[in-house]
Image (tube, rainbow, N blue to C red; front, side, top):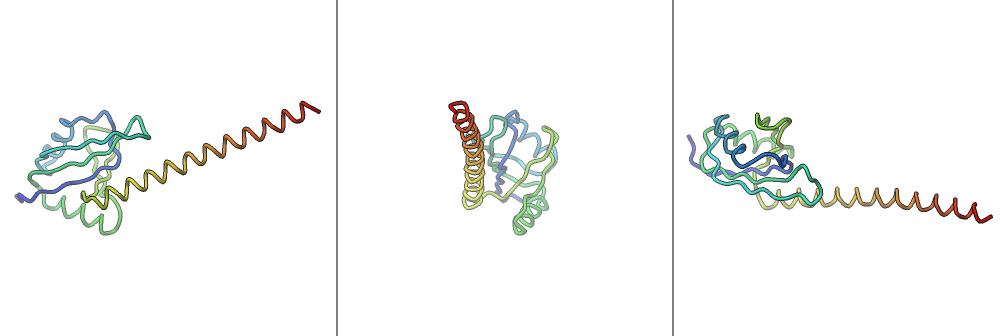
Length: 136
């Protein structure tokens, strides 16, 4: 058993998942002892937030290796928890990684707002054309 501390970042986790779910999930799957969890509220999604999971002790050193190997390939480690449907994308926690995902999510928000504005402009242009025709 390794006693090295380790932390993972989960960019999207369902809001219905509780601290107890996370503690139990990683303990029951013999991965590690969770020391703390930091959930962050999403400003863009009512159903998901992000989380940083801090481990006091790792039971499974291979888990840590798998997370790091995936991260080197710039892809998440897919973890399938029993407490919620679907999967959690895990990344080793570093400030740099959190900033990357925050920036990526912010870019996604900007793109979505831009698309909504384009739709609104198109709607308003059609409305103007209709009103101009109605005047004639």
